[in-house]
Length: 444
Image 1 (cartoon, helix red, strand yellow):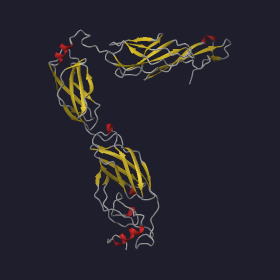
Image 2 (cartoon, one colour):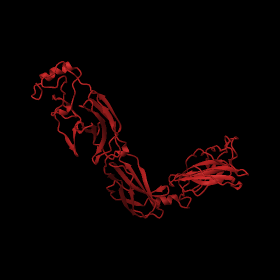
Image 3 (cartoon, helix red, strand yellow):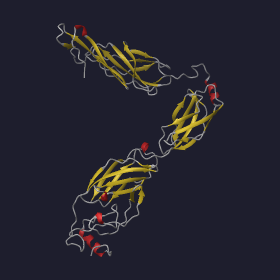
Image 4 (cartoon, helix red, strand yellow):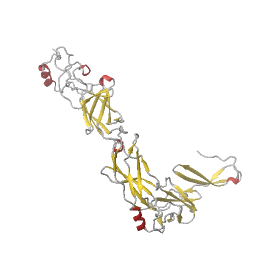
């Protein structure tokens, strides 16, 4: 992409600069253009190695005040580059809302004082070099620096007097109100509001954890706050603290709350399948803690065949991270999916993991009466009582062996497919057990 200049004139010669701007900031790139006298061609200055300046060294921050800092750096000793004409200084502050901002341009020296900064705020700085051919890459990022606070001492106040006043402030935190989306509304009342009261700090922690600041209410007249960043399905404690700059009064009483659970917003991780005959072992890891949204009560496992009659559903307790699925039909393509469930519902399913069971059959020396010649009947398990979860039937992960003969696993009416077993490859050991089993359902 570019811009063509036609027709061209000698007066079009000069330095051109392109500025790209986005929500993350801006960058510039320039170049020189020379038009020949006859106007027959455009002849940009020949780029030579090293014409674009190399980035300056990392700036050093000194002379920090509540609203300014002084930066200094050294010029890059690169004789191959065209002379640097100026520098650009950029600053970043997360507290100020970001992104990187150009705070000074056309800086001719190798030192600059950045003013207009916010007190008690952390900043980062970098420098770029400029010459006739363009802009260098950024220097290294400076060490984080915090501007000074407009402390009571700097305002001519006695810190001890301010502290005595704050000690008389009593904040009474009401019972938190948990809203349906999971946000929490806090409200409080105040006794003896001090003249030096600047606002309130709302602190929270997961039960037994470390206190963190949720937000600072920077208005003495405010009596409430809304917390929206708490995790779902967690026990929290909250309190409120009056403050004036770095000084603070006594905390309110601690209030406990529990955010409502939600279905997990992420699937289980690291789902893997290992096969052994017509049985497969499926294992997984829980969803990320921040996306569990409560206590995981159970996991749902789907082993889906190409037809619904081959589907196998199973559930295990929330502390179990693996299970064995038995009775997969040879030759049927399956895919396994796993999801975690809280008291609020079933979360996202994992990506399907394909499963393919070989189509080999175990043959016997002679056909067994009434059965399919040359095919050993399939062993199953005793019927189990399912749990109905929504519109599906789910069977627990524990299997109780039984023996049920049928021409195929799908036709085995006495056993659920989740518990179907196949005979051991040692055919001659299995046949006597089938013949000796006294059941009218076995073929004679």
